[in-house]
Image 1 (cartoon, rainbow, N blue to C red):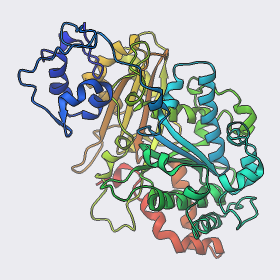
Image 2: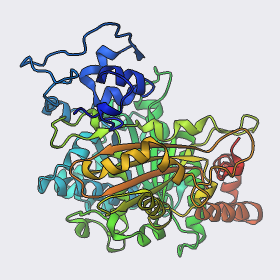
Image 3: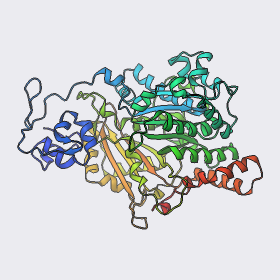
Image 4: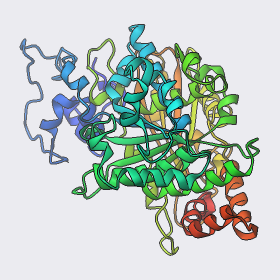
Length: 537
């Protein structure tokens, strides 16, 4: 019996007579998923992105052996993808760049996770191989770079190799960092671009690979001078010097950023840098994913993946913190991997896929029209990742999974009832997703997420709605069901603490730091004035 690999309904549940008609009748509006999951049928069913009229066309087209099943589906689940395609950057999800000490550590954790999966011959290694178009590391501190897995093992770089390949401010600083000064971090980037384009001429990153990826992601912190000051300037330069300006819609650019807690022990400088860094990166980025160290510490161990060697290359205080962060990005990477992994029935990822832009573009047109802003700020995506080990999930089990994700395993501090909506992905092995899928198809899971205890979709004023997008996927090599989520623009105590401290310093301070804040305050307000449901149009 044939089952649709997008909605997981069997042929007996379809209103249509065959698979082609079902795809056009039930999934024509989700052309991206049809293209990704049924690439062999896509050209026949769509022309220029629009559904075609099948007319009396016979759906039963033989495969190479001449065999077809009862409703025209090839007996073969599809050929394995060519290694050349997997090794190409084109169409893969991310090009990732770790900036500064924190960004280098997180990038190391991602690369070590990829190596762990490959070394153990785990099928999940295909997620990173098929999703990571390329990567790079940049820093102003040569000592931090020298200690990375990237430099020591992957590239085997000496100090002399690192200077041209990974240093920001080559020849214009002493390579010892920016001393928590965001303004200095910005200056050294500008110096790098005065006489050329280091992405093309010097840094160990291929501009074509960056252009070929679906999206570019910067990984960094906002407490020190490099992550806070250099990253926004780098993002601007990527837009201007690397990415094509011929497109009507720009390539997606995201920032995964580690932020200080509301009661951070580092004090005022970290909060001020946080406010400035987030505001400046939000000028260029489409979306910002803030991770809070306090929440990363508190999440349950069931979303901390195995990463061999992380203790050697990450500082002791960050080895456990970076594991759930990597798990979240791995799930995000998985969400559109079906476009390039092989379709062998024993390991194919099946279901709805969403592109990077699907995580933030639906909220962009919810911003008010009548506010005079210096710029349109990035969408803030609050990250959550829940897990259920239940053998068979029913409605009450899904409620527990949602609670686990939105309360126990949220990776930043926020109030879900203040979000503008969100994007969610539920995924797991086929034998468990068979029980979950009906609750997705009849909107039960969406109703649970939107309930009063969670996103509380009925608590909204005005004409706009609180939108919740839920996708589902079968991942054969998992044991449990997971719920990944990105909530849009909720109120976040740690961000409010940054803003309040910076505002007080701007209004009452008599220091150079206060004066520099006053000079750029017109850039700070737009981002923070959009957080919370009350600020939605």
